[in-house]
Length: 436
Image 1: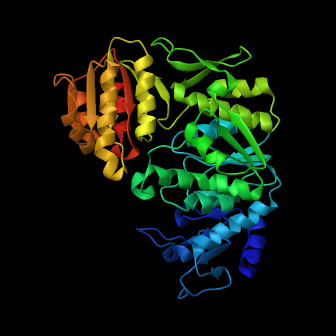
Image 2: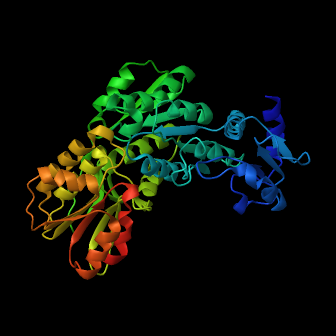
Image 3: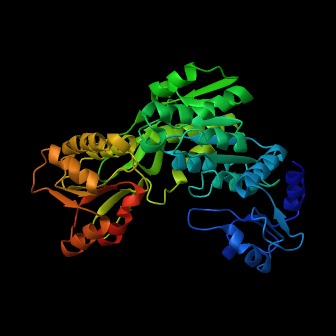
């Protein structure tokens, strides 16, 4: 730990931490991380020449002055430095994970807490073993609270991230069939996400959970927490107003009768909103200001977005997809009364041996939408469509989004209400400019 104390002293007098030698901030610390296609050790001298105050590397052959600091494992050293910094932060830290809704919930919580505190939070989706320590190391004495998103695709990852972020308050948004290749099964998903609950049980932190969710209730009942806080539509007596083509955004009525009009698409976001408001309540935000923060929040990055273009109206939810989130999006789309509906669905990736059956189940659900046209993108949906009796005249199949975009450029769609939903790897955002 002598090395960590030395690095922490340097960190406190530095301009922060950088892991990319091409974007060095003068006076920052460079950590020479390795990846599948790069080795940061090869760029140590570049980083120092660009103005880094020091470079932490694990190639013992690199020669230089005392600005080059050697360690056995750069990534573990970065994580340990973040742990050291976290111990000095006397602020409430909220940690969250889940199969769906992590990033939106993180942003809603941040918006609510920003009404009272300067709140640091995960940037974008930097929620892994590198992103979490970098987020922690960006926190300073100016911050009054932090919100840390934690993602995982294999067992043990949430336990690791929890040990770095050390959250005081934690929540799992939900558990679903995501990254099944890495988790092995739905039970594997529950065990891995439950690693956050395990941390809170041992640390004496506060667990926030959706009591309407039977899987989460089961996971909660298997543990003993110092403090439990519940939320949920049924739990709080919240009413969800029916969307329409003219007003597709989510509106809810709180138990008090207060109407919350959001700029989010999809009733599945109700739970995310309630979680954010409950954390605001726990940390002392003003209720009216919290509501306003929720209403002012505008989604981005192709998550629960509504785009009214010159040609069509688009619901864009193409940042990620798994069976749970796909079903929620389609069910919400079904509720909207609109004559000219179009579905664009991209494959759900990383589902392993369950993939075909899960894609078939989604297509059976999509049959009920009443869409005029259905566009399927990817090998899995194309395979699944052989087992679902859609009208051949209404279904169009493409191997990838490039081919779909070329087709849509030649066969223009106008006046339609279109849902675009698929995994990030399918890149359905390619068709947005053509359709809007």
